[in-house]
Length: 234
Ligand SMILES: C[S@@+](CC[C@H](N)C(=O)[O-])C[C@H]1O[C@@H](n2cnc3c(N)ncnc32)[C@H](O)[C@@H]1O
Image (cartoon, rainbow, N blue to C red):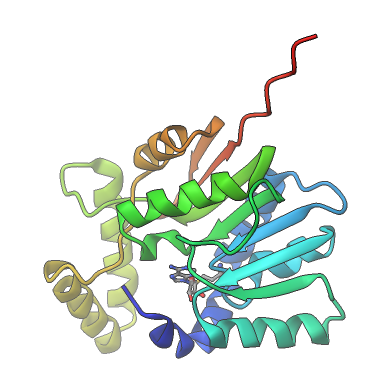
């Protein structure tokens, strides 16, 4: 897993990826599923350069943009100030320990952050998302959703497409492919989980109305709701 310091070196790259058509479509999918009401309090976990946070801020009351990297946070603060959006508040913290109050958010959203966490860390992050959501609040996560499993047809397809895309880049792509294979073999690669894992993890973290959409590439979006508080008798 990259440390916060490593992430500081990826601001320009994260910004470039956020501009891609794929990420813009994911942003729209995630925010539509979050169903933000006017004035909502939104938490963006692993906010990076602000793909979700900036779009959410146009409608939300408050956006807490949480990221482990101070440099990502500084970049996002500058972008928000330049856009005149004063409701984006950057917090430098980890997804597994959100410095936010219980039941204080209407929605928690995240894009392409959680595959940098191991499965046990993802479970801690889901428990944190559940804790900070108000009853009835929604969690929506977009992420890589496959595993490196050669006996699974979707996983095989994703790996084939990723390898072809890298090889089309010529020698630099081939080098990257080899480097990824080495990192995977030495267990230093990222930790994507597949769609069924995500669905089960949200249910075991206490979410209901859990819905999974696998996209026609490596990605997927999983959403759930912190169940509303039971009505008081009488
Ligand atoms: C691939 S970028 C995605 C950024 C943004 N969500 C987007 O879609 O453009 C992943 C982000 O997750 C952040 N990150 C990685 N591990 C994290 C953790 N444990 N807690 C919070 N943020 C983390 C990184 O600093 C980085 O900004």
